[in-house]
Image 1: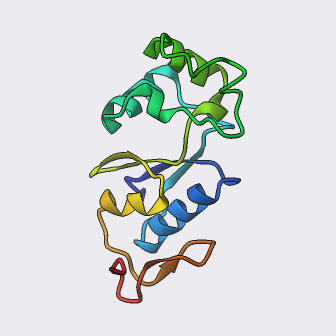
Image 2 (image 1 turned 60 degrees about the vertical axis):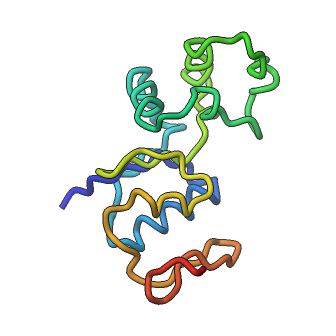
Length: 142
């Protein structure tokens, strides 16, 4: 069965790996797009931003990217210019972005994915750093 869940993933990113783990812990095997190798088209990227309901600037990744060198902190830059930068340098696209039948979300922190997963967690899940995100009953600790 093909999953209705897609993750725009960077396997080098702990948050992205944790998010993928939470998706799999719900019993789904998502479509994984390693967006640095297979970047979204401009139309796809603009549609994702629109569906997330966030400002374009909120999708820009600053750390470990050419953000500062490109002067992307300039408030005068238009959304089109910011999207141009993400198209030219996909590393500027923050991750992970997850698409499910319940919505589209930039999943930072990784447990934000729980809000848009159609199926409950099937068991305990801890992040790579040991933080318990879901208990043995598939619930978030309070």
